[in-house]
Image (tube, rainbow, N blue to C red; front, side):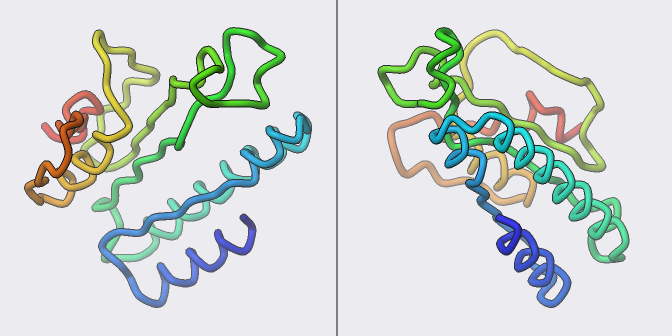
Length: 155
C-alpha cells in the first residue's frame, strides 16, 4: 500500500484528475492473518496517507477548498463474536456492516452520524456522481440513491 499511496500522490500532482480512486488492502491481509498489532499499524499509516493527500490537495489551487474525499470499505469484519474479527462474509455476524466518511468544503462537521434505515454500499457511486454534478444512471435493481444528503455534502 505504501507504493500505491505514493503512485496515487504522484499521479494527483502530475495529472490533476477530477476523480481519483485509491484502494488499499494491507489491513485486510493483516486481519486475515490475525496480526492485530500490524493491522493497527497499517490503519495508522492510512491515516497519515489521507492526511498527506488532503494537505496536498489543499496546497494546489485547482483543489483547494473544492475537494471532497469519500472514504469507505469494501466489507466489514466479524464484530459480534470477537474471535471472528479476522473474517468476513455471509456467515460472519457483523461483517455486512461498513462505514463511510466524507470531508470537504460543503460537508457539515457532525462527527459520527447514525440515521434510521439502511444505506447500501452500492449508493457510493451515486454519491460520487452527485458531488460531481452528474446524474447517476441506475443500471441494476439495487439501491442507487445518493447518500450525499445524509452526509450533508450539499446545502
